[in-house]
Length: 618
Image (tube, rainbow, N blue to C red; front, side, top):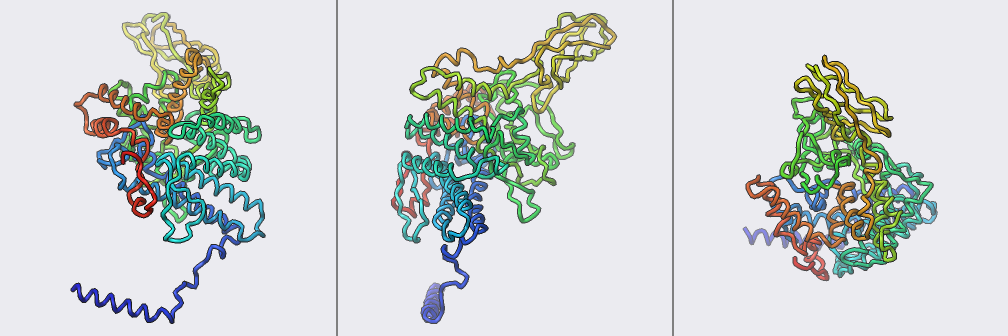
């Protein structure tokens, strides 16, 4: 059998050899790059190909299985038992390879487009410039993801000339960052303003400036530690803040930011850049992602929207919020969705929480119940993924301003930038209710009425015992936690009617803007403000894929994860579910060392590119 196979192979090779002189081996429909990119339509088709890699990167594992949430959440599923999600993997891991591949494919597409952009100079120069700016920025953004994840990587800035020219050594992280900044800075002068575009799904000046602030903050931190970049980060963020034409502002509603994303509504004042997803896989033009599926509250109800729910939060994240911070109960579900036999969006509310049960709560920023594309698909969502929000720009400005060498204490501008973010996320309803007089004769609970004060939306019930009114309970609310109302500027008057009794009185206090302010003690020193901003970023941006990168650039990733591991063991003990045991024994505990600041260079790349070297510890 082996001899017959070899003989057949030899005959086939001989036949091919005999035909070689008679056949044209080049396909007739083969296009040289110089044959293409000949009109604006072809340029934009090629640019769409560069954008497409964004949707690949942000479609699934980045939201729950790559560990980018750092200390905010944990992988809840029982399998796989190895991988980035529990910090137990090797350089041969397929997801480590796929991330690298996706980013370099995007870079390669950008390189071909940039190299052939001027094949036809008759194309309007303004068109070519916009395409160039967007392609430059996207290439730089892909390198930004690479350098954060793998450290220094090969800098490929032109199309690969041949399949043999693959041995390219790693540039240093500093060199990669310098190239990123150069490309993005050039792009800033070429791309359209966000108001000209009218939506955040395309690269625009605000996005470029805001991401440049982020890049500079990372370059100022570990491992490059070029602290001169704090000023550059501050200046780029300030360009976004001071841009009167764009007029960026926080959405008045924190939950509204994410409801808009689910409902396919653009909010270019707050969301400066987002990855586009669309459809329900019912036609050829669908490109769905996994936002709200893998990183939302679990749901088996297809009318609500099926959610695989691969994460739950840590108690540390839950208790990072103060009472009155409405971001907590939007970001962390205080309910579970009903099953397939129940109506769409039905909920069972969680009535209490402690250091043990907090680990059993789902992240809830992205809720499929708000999707408008029907019917809802069970294997993909149309929810866009936000890459840059104005709230992030304000906090980057504050952080960079605080870190500048000439500032020994937090500046008023830095403090106010953080206060803007906190005020937007704060309750404006009733804070407390004090029963002054329980009255008498009550046989049933009286109706509670809150009048005046400029607000609305309170839903509350009274409770009685022994003929007296003994308390008031606010109704559960899936958005704000409880229905304490909103918009109150003065204290409302509380009255009671019915219940067959009389004489009950109560007074209320309300949350105020002052409650949301950065505490005075925090503003007294650079160090205290730094620590506060680090927590504030988690309160505002939890689950948005930035946390591990932040912990690494602050050079506290390993110590923070070990601290979290000890906290989890203290909270849960050892007699817990296997999932919890995975969390701190296999994951946050002994597996995390300095090597986990970076992923390894994939084994396949080391085989193909002999000039590559592996990261320390791998």
